[in-house]
Image 1 (tube, rainbow, N blue to C red):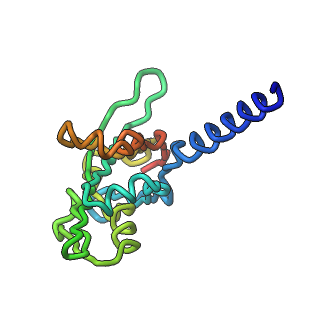
Image 2 (image 1 turned 45 degrees about the horizontal axis):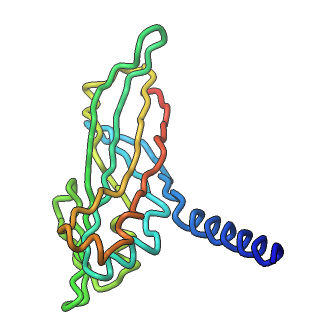
Length: 187
């Protein structure tokens, strides 16, 4: 009898361990590039691990998902707190229309939005890339000074009618957020 209880407890612990590792926050920012044009400071970056199984299932059932990215530019100072130069918040939203079998991606900073595709991998790529985003005007920066970009991405909380929370219980597992990433550079 004791062996059965110990096996049951070990099995239960293994199941919890597997489930928690599946739901763990795996999202991260990648390939962060800071560059400039003649007039502006630009950023390029990717978001990896933002499409968990739960998020994908919800999107495929027609629930829209929005990823928000927060980016701040700071002038690094030694004896006092860093001074914030600019702050940018952008959002990417994906909606799937099961009747038309197409995805619509809206990016708040992209004038060519919405982007329509029938390919989920292409939609994922559009959702997980930020290209050519203006962070600040170069006139706000001083040559030879040290600066820092701080960036973070998160999946916005889904707001559904109350009764749908019982049907779509997996929506509560959408806690997806990256750590803060920093990139130091001298202008």
